[in-house]
Image 1 (cartoon, rainbow, N blue to C red):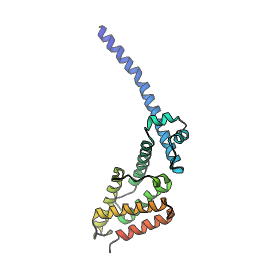
Image 2 (spheres, rainbow, N blue to C red):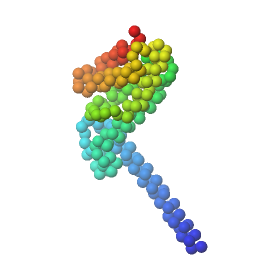
Image 3 (cartoon, rainbow, N blue to C red):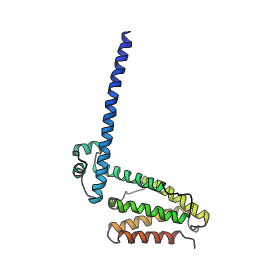
Image 4 (cartoon, rainbow, N blue to C red):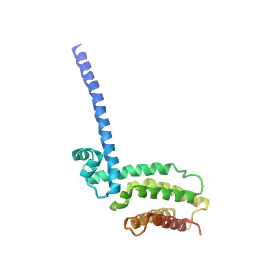
Length: 204
């Protein structure tokens, strides 16, 4: 009997603590979201902004920022992850499996480029130094489009699928680097990117 009472009391304690844990988790999630949102806005304006500036923009202490993100690099990774999720959601809203494949691929390029225009911080990121797994979903969607276009005769079959996809991505990087270095304005870089992609992909 006493053991049953003790067990029941312990369960009550756990039950009482659970709403507190949920509230703390919810508060922490809101704090993290506020920091990320502030960081994106601030870094778009000032790509070299530090943690203290991010904390000020988010309306929290620097210690709170470090509690969620152990370093500026960790925060920057989280920012890029968030922007990547937004871009992928927009890409997935395109109908990649119907309509002229080359036109859809150009729409995908435009959509990706708009991410750079809306978030200039992406143009100022240091090179990853290797294959960035964030590229994998984009590569997969480009492969789907190019493969479909090749089957329909809309995209050249004179070059391998993997080469064409890698070349399109490289062209995008080149356009981004030209804008970041102020060698080309964004609109001219976009036009050059589209024209180059068409010349690369069109049959003949």
